[in-house]
Length: 91
Image (cartoon, rainbow, N blue to C red; front, side):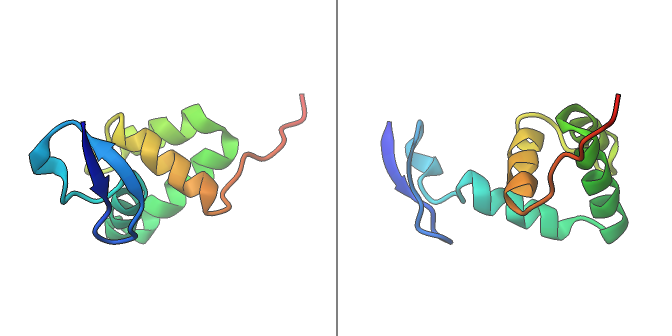
């Protein structure tokens, strides 16, 4: 393992390959991916996340282009940290 510092935010971590030392951390990578999405896709994903994590991941899979695991899990975590949360559903 190699010590690593994100070139954008400075977050510390480790990577398994020397050549990955200059890559963005998961949070900066997720933020860049989110910003690159069409606003309609962003809205659809946020709406699905409010229904729960699985619908959110499914919406990411169904997006064009699809967002695949594990990147979708990072994007879900990023959106939850941005204040998009699950809504209570009456049963």
